[in-house]
Each structure stands twice: as structure tokens, then as C-alpha cells.
Length: 88
Image (cartoon, one colour):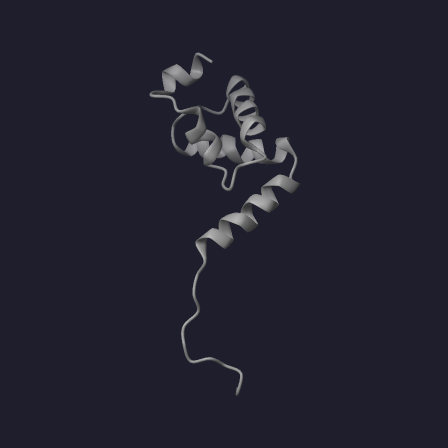
């Protein structure tokens, strides 16, 4: 107990994002793109379909080396509406 510090722990969000980014880099594009697809479905950007899986895989492949979260490929698409995304 002598080594316990009475002050509270400090949460480091930048370190958490770095650790998450390292974890995502180690996963395959298929593994990460399925997570990205789920994020797209949750946000009503796409439905659960074959073309949508290709969009998720392509956006993941482009962003994978620099992404910290599975939301980043979605924001990187910078589309104004779901209809425009489906036209890709």
C-alpha cells in the first residue's frame, strides 16, 4: 500500500488512439472493413449489401495505414448524402 498514490489516474486519449491504430494496422483489410461496414450501417449510410461491402473495403484499404478508429474511413469519404455514396 505504500506505493499507492492518492491522486486520481489521468486518462490519455491520444495514447488510446495510438494503441487502437496499432491494433487496426495488424488486422487484415477484411477484418477491419467488416467493422467499418458495421459503422456505416449503424449510421444509416449504407444497407447491408454486396456493393456496400465493396465500398467499406475500398474506404478501409485507403485509410488503413493512418486510421485510429473504424469511423475514420467513413469521415474520409466526405459525402454529403447516402445516395451519393451508393452511386460510387
